[in-house]
Length: 293
Image 1 (cartoon, rainbow, N blue to C red):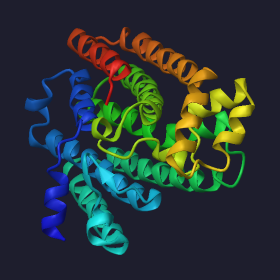
Image 2: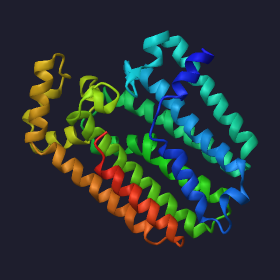
Image 3: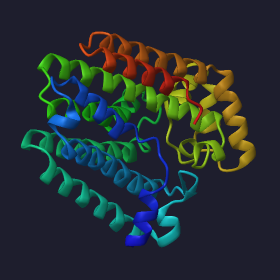
């Protein structure tokens, strides 16, 4: 299991969350690498370890066979073993946090873990409730994605003793960037292919999990509902559903929502005091909006 985890952690990812934490640390008065030293790197590693643990558990829950272009842990070793490996990563995350940061930041990360788990629970119950609820969808992605983006920036800033006003702006920017990121992720799930995504395409739709493009399409053309509910079970039905979602404007309207969240993030970023931080976060926000993987 140790070798399996070492290989899993070594798979190349975007490293967005630890990167945001390091950029968040620029909000402090002193150079974070002088003021916080190895501690800030350790906290960034803990954030990424938390993210990786949630991915392992997500793959088990969603029965996803691919992650970052390679077989998921449960596909290689079994579901029970994968759950235990995810649990172990969580334990390592909190060990790093306990020895690397103060009580306030440790509490932030513990709270974040609770939100992530609640997001998964809400997702499970949504499948049996109002599958096309925009409000439920936004609440879920806020808990699963946006919250951790904001937390990364905030934790870095708090670690270098940034002013409360700066921390609040970073929280707002991170949340909005995370919301845009997840909406784009959900668009790509329907428009891209497995080689680019590193995971099965249209996996959410096939599993009966309806994301913003589908919700937008159903709101504009109710005939789409019959094509996605129950979930498409074969390639022909799936392709027909994808064409209908696009034709109804689901992709285009979801993309507009991602642009709106990015605009909110840019407004908060533009008010930050540190010019280097403003420049880098603005670039990142735009890159996340325009990505194709």
